[in-house]
Image (cartoon, rainbow, N blue to C red; front, top):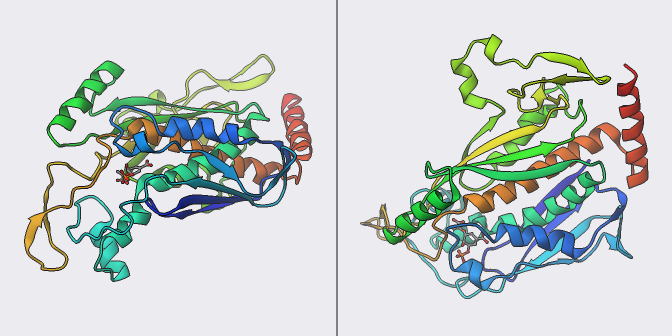
Length: 346
Ligand code: EPS
């Protein structure tokens, strides 16, 4: 079983992730992870924090002489910006975890909620996901992301302009990103039990990214407006293998991969911290007020796409290990090859 946890606060000393269940024998370097961390820091609309941080990982365990040894892989990303850690506030920001979190954990200082609920935590996810991505690359499985739109604008120059405009108005923007997984064999995931369905696991993985409010697979909600004849992907047998000419299912049928690219979309709401704040209520005095304002992004949809890649990489790697098992990379690869061979002679 592949699993990971993260720990760390946004302005604490560091973020960490422990990835457990990765096979032995995978060649892995810090630069494999740092390139993904760098991508997460980019994109239009990022705030001042990204000018301060230069996220770099330290691999604390799980690797010897450049290869994984099957033990838990502990990853550390130090925070440079820690100055806000001791600054209290009591004005909850609509859209953030502030109010519900304070009620739940009985906190008077909303800093105790913000620090862990901040999307900064996703840096640790990207680090763990980068290891999964490297593992998947050994099976020729590729993961990428792209922007569908930001604030309704599908062209880069247009969404960059829209972000500048909302920034000047003290506002924020969300959007939709797409994650694509290519070269998965058919049969990852299963319909046998609800929690083994890969579509459900991928939906959870993407929905768990802060600010994501919707996930679609393939044609998603659009297919509800069409008859079945326009939706379902017809089956062909070409060049010795089964295939489809369309991919409205987004690569997933019956909770399993079907051999076509997995296509996922996630809808991200606008960033909740607004420079021109919305109405709120002071947690201490119960008097009407305006929400707390703190350094934040204007838009982080491009960064969220990189986090989406990491989360999808984790779930696909977990599904691949569920199916093929193995404690070493060559063992998993041998099982994988045997399965592909069986499929090729059906
Ligand atoms: C983020 C770091 C945070 C925010 C942002 C994402 O740093 P700071 O609060 O010090 O500016 O920039 O988080 C949010 C806006 C949020 O709502 O969670 C990061 O590393 O991605």
